[in-house]
Length: 282
Length: 293
Image (cartoon, rainbow over all chains, first blue to last red; front, side):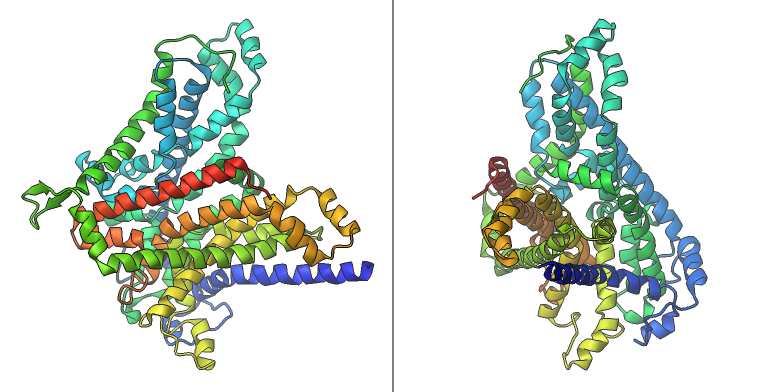
């Protein structure tokens, strides 16, 4: 019996390592390709071991850009992506937490209709209303701006629902106690509720940051200027249809750079991220 | 459920919901309404005149064989992506759920693909399986397979499904692991005492108890395959070769932007909206009830 258990554990280790290999292989290949010479890759002779062009490729990618299709340095694209992701994450948390506060801690006419108006937005991703949204952003002269990049993506309710649910679990006694201390709605929010929500906010931040960083279709439509481009759009523009022109080491270096911030956030904040994910999806 | 203890204030709550309400109305409801209105309008080629045509855009759409094919294709992609990534993720989660040394290391090494953006996934996979320079293509050719996803529609579709499923493994893995950890160990021990072997224990105890998670993930994966594969498709095949990888969302994009056919594109958007609402509705109904058998 004990021996059989041992064999089973061994099998589990092996299966998990195979899974990890499947998951990691494409990324390993990208890292290796980013250190090799373009001519060798273009010949289909790429080796599976790192080459010696690491510094050269990454310097070119971050500060110069490709020589052909998009001449924008990837460093700038990453800055755009970073600003957009931060605006989406911070903006969504900010507007959501105060509206959830209003809905839970106040009674006012149209409270439930307002809640439902917000709730319904859960259902539709931006993709299905893409052209009308584009038109509105264009009419508001927000094309090629950070506001245009982020505001339409802030317009959904996941965060509001999460905060509402969390506020419901906060015991009534806390409000009573701070009332006795003479706290009004602002003091209670700032001194009691906000500190209690810290872990929720952090978990949500991780998920929203990744969501924002990884946006594709929306920035593809509304950015026309190269200097406003995000890294996800930039990488797509680097792949030309004729193979000879694609600078694969630069493309792969860009892919690696595009992965770094969100993957770093997931690994560093693993516990918060898992909790936040499971909560938001419920 | 209601709070007993609340604040009295007439204007403050409105001020608090105002920012979110404003953004939602301007960037969500207004465009969604526009899409519905647009879907009933027909614009001439120069955008000079528009006329109200009732359901003509919809009727034209369903007469179009390409649209019907896109529906079938989208569902086929969705099920292929969901089934392959769900089954692999379940296998890995069952293994990771065992008390193993280095359990957290395994988990960390398996969850990060969640954070990789769809276009990056597309770039990684097209590079790996590129007909002339892909590392894996060499082996495929070595095995006598005439591999060229840039020309062969079925191969292109396979490539999209593989890449999309690859990205989704980590997400499914996390939810399966959470689901497995919430199954009480005593139930499994009882089955073991009754003499059920591990495989039998899995199929008669674990799997049924996991069914709410499986159902939830199935819906989430289908919605993912509908929308989030856009970036993968756009970087890898741009809907081609021919139209062999054009999904419903991709068709909304190409018909509206490249074809300039806004009425049809809007009608397609509305149909998609209905599909998502139905899917979400199903999910809420079942998950809220916590299906267990």
